[in-house]
Image 1 (cartoon, one colour):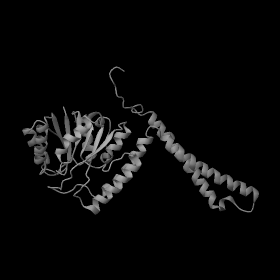
Image 2 (cartoon, one colour):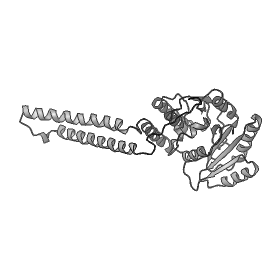
Image 3 (cartoon, helix red, strand yellow):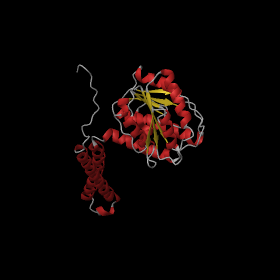
Length: 313
């Protein structure tokens, strides 16, 4: 199969028939074999009934239904497991992403050799104050932290090699950082394409201000896990050593001062409590590192690596 088109959604019943017809038109024009995987993330409208009706008319339409709202990341993760196309395209269901972009995205994967391609909505139709400015800030922070030179990490319109989506796990609200997940999984060729952003035709946005706070916390989480999940002692041991040595240094200074000048009590010095606190924190960080190493060493995925097999090797 040429393409798997993954579309997570919640309460988008009005847009689904138009979006499906548009995708079908593009697929027929380019003679692609394809599947459309809708993921109904606990919709309260009749989105699932619409998907079933579309399925009865077009066998390429498939659906996954959640009993309640689990979030976009869960929807993408389940759809990635089911996707069988050589190239996997993700897009939003609100008609703000154009299916006309699909052929060029696929070309960048198949012909240009990218592992994944992220869309860049250079011209947007969103509220500048509540969406554009925070998005630019987090994109800049993510570029700095991850080293991936993308302008729009959170664009829903992306293309992937099938092996990329099979090699990553999208959880929590990590859908914003799939390029980072792909990089940590060993996929280095990540491209970008300017794509059309259309004004919303039906419904309202499903994302509120909390996504910015959650997005920042997820970035910290994914950075830590990506760097230290296999070697937690490298993180906890470093900071534990620094804290312990700081506390020990202060304690030695106080002891030497006490020997030279016996006119004060150690417990009357603020430095005594500072050194004690630093030593205790250092020991706790060491213990956290040891426990992390034990968990990592006994994990079933401790030696899980992505291996590309080539004929003749």
